[in-house]
View 1 (tube, rainbow, N blue to C red):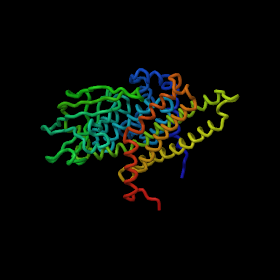
View 2: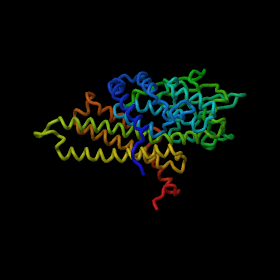
View 3: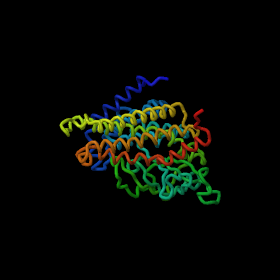
Amino acid sequence: MDFELSESHRLIQQTARRVSKDVIAPRAAELDITGEYPQDIFQAFADTGLTGLTIPTEYGGSGAGMLALALAVEEVAKYCCASGLMLLLSALPTQPVMIGGDEKQKQWIGKGIASGEIKGAFCLTEPNHGSDAGNLETSAKKDGDDYIINGEKMYISGGTVADYIICFARTQTNGASSAVAGPKGIAAFIVETNSPGFKVAGQDRKMGVRGVPTADIVLEDVRVPRENLIGGAEGQGFNHAMMTLNSCRPVVGARGVGLAEGAMTYALEFARQREAFGKPIAELQAIQFMFAEMAIAIEAARLLVYQGAWRVDQGLYSREHAAYLSIAKAFATETAVKVSSDALQVLGAQGYMMDHPLERHYRDARQLMIVEGTSQVQRVVIARALLERELVYP
């Protein structure tokens, strides 16, 4: 078992580290205050090839894989969790196409995302259906060779700047309610945001992660050609959504690992300089134990995230493998919340002030336990795997 990164992985890590220090770190506090999407940071990602890490070479990317993306996101999130989300969005709205799309769709979306020419958004959550995504109400009705989509999507990261969305909509109810029809009636569509009837109805006012806007999307009689139905199959949308979420969960965890590392590093440097009781507080055992606990959690989270991303790169992200990815996501994101809280505590009153980045890290970390499956949803997945003997300890 080899725990060393490959040379290509190290180069990607170093590239992301350089972009993070040179471009992102100086802008992180400003993004949090203004809430404006940082086009310059997105362009830096595109110029260095970081937007194409998970896209196969035949579709315009580098084919480096999900572990490579996790490494890059970890470096970015040390300084700015919002920028880490921006980089994650190179995968989240492309995975449904790479998993289930036809060749034309893969070329279109893959090359556009990898080059930075287009941005995408993943539209699953609805006002009445968050974690209960299998019962979504957005409808897609056939009209000749097209589909007419009507519905509303909420909390869509990057929705205000997206050139296309992956929209999950119900094509079949068999005359029943959506709750009865269930996941089998759901399809996935590529919807261009310049389509008539597509509207950004509002932008959310968020606690954190403000540099990437989160939008309320309304679709009113949006006409979508049949060739935009992912894979040409109506009943596969829910499977595309779940496989996408499974495969991206380690990268959400990487956002947590990077944030925790950044928060601990900042607090540690502060503790080396801040004196109390006649010496630097880093020499106080109570403070030292706090840092030791942070390091233990970070190292455990990193191993789970790297292992999870490696599993995705081996194609192990279907239902029977989902528990390992949920474990990585849950542990790493909860670690981010705990470490950022303890790092803030080390600074005391100063940590609560906007003069230091820790209050931002703490606010940003709290998002991670909710997005792409709450911590409770991850535990449902893990418990199910145990009960169904998919996760076994002989």
